[in-house]
Amino acid sequence: MVSIKPPAGMRDFLPLDLSRREYALSIIRNVYLSHHFEPIETPVLERIETLQGKYGEEGDQLIYQVLKRGQKLEEALSQAPILPHQLADLGLRYDLTVPLCRVVAQYQHELPSIFKCFQIRPVWRADRPARGRFREFVQCDVDVIGTRSILAEVDVVSAACEALAALGLADFQVRINDRRLLTAITLAAGIPPQKSGTTLVALDKLDKIGPDGVERELGERGIGPASIKLILSLLADGCATGDEARLRLGQMAQDLAERLEPQIATDLQEILHLLAATGIPSTSLLFDPTLARGLSYYTGPIYEISLQGSAGSVGGGGRYDELVGMFLGRTVPACGVSLGIERVLMIMEERGLLAGVTPTCDVFVACFPEVSAEPSLRLAAELRARGVVVDCYPEPTRLKKQLAFAQKMGARVVLLAGPDEMRQGQVTARQMSTGRQITLDSSEAADHIVKLLAGQE
RNA sequence: GUGGAUGUAGCUCAGCUGGAUAGAGCGCAGGAUUGUGGUUCCUGAUGUCGAGGGUUCGAACCCCUUCAUCCACCCCA
Picture 1: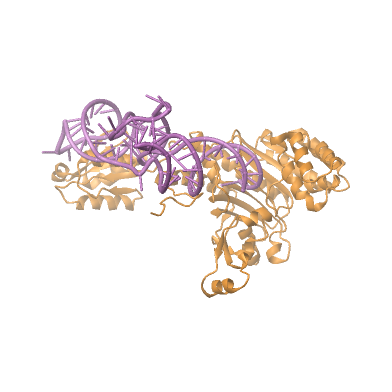
Picture 2 (picture 1 turned 30 degrees about the vertical axis):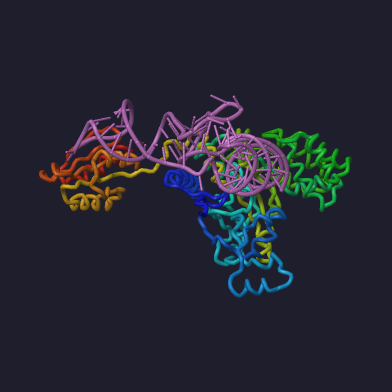
């Protein structure tokens, strides 16, 4: 027997699950639309070359590859030795940003000079599944292509934060840093560029394992004691908000004056300042000099969004000015933020924010064995024409069973057109929330039912 | 990829140091009420005890192997 479970890390969504996903997604979508981000979609598969070399070494290994087909596969298999990387010509997209950049390169002349778009689509990673981590999951990206302005960063970050607030998750925290700041710090500490990657990974853990842990880990990775000391002295103070963040950034700009464009620090200060102006509490905006982020394509400011009391992040992003250039050969500045819907839903579930979200049906029409379904079907059609969702039970079972079924389906009104009603040319409407019933003449039934449903809102 | 734990009904779990027909709650089905759901009451069905092997008179329980899931680390959304 083959297993009937979906593949590891992938899920089936039944109606209840989907009603909740769609509820949350529609809120996010509406917030993104309110900023005038426009929706786009791209194929789930990309050429393997499009995906490779964009995410860093670890990321590249997590791309799901799709085997060549037919003669091309035979050719690849007939080579000796067989090279694994020549067996695939396509891959499932690993994120939404790289395909977006391909699209921007492809349609550069058709797209607006400043292109604001969003994508709510699944991505695939051949990761090991864990709590809140899946191999197939939906990301909600907002991006601004074509400007270096920090107002673009403010736009995408504030849109993501507004979406979280609209979902009832107002206790988010946005941590901000800049890749160039990290680079300057490692250079100032005398760390060779080829080791800066592993250094950043260790630094990222500062809040988890503390300065001593980072010191040990850096030592293990072959960083000299003097460099470690220097780095930690620059970073040991951890995150900062508000005026403290401003001061800290100013201080860093001075300390690193030889290696850091002063603009970078003032931009970060300004981003924090302007984000506060969009309504994000300044206590939720943190400068985190240890924030690194794994994806290798970021070139400037980077972000991570997390919620109180839950491990991991619900979103992240940054500026990736060189990524479009990898397809186009010409630099096109861009930045974006992504929310992970799976984690958002997990936290909403934990907090009971989805308890009331269930599938519903406006009107459910019962089925009687003794009479023709014709009048019921006419009424159902009339209601549907007026925008009402109507379901008709197909089997003439006992009314008790039909009512129980209707309730399970989330029906708000059940229509009864049995022999008693038929004789009078009438129909009975039962309001499921109260149990109250009214009997209506068929001619005016649709009007009344529409009003009844409107009155329940 | 590293470490730890757990696999018993559709779900959540109980099942003593190995003992005969493997249990509960919820859910499901039927009935009390052959035209009335959500409450109540009655009745019922359901399990290769994750899989394979071993020890034993006897295994859900002990041993080995394997698979799956979960938790932590890593990484991320």
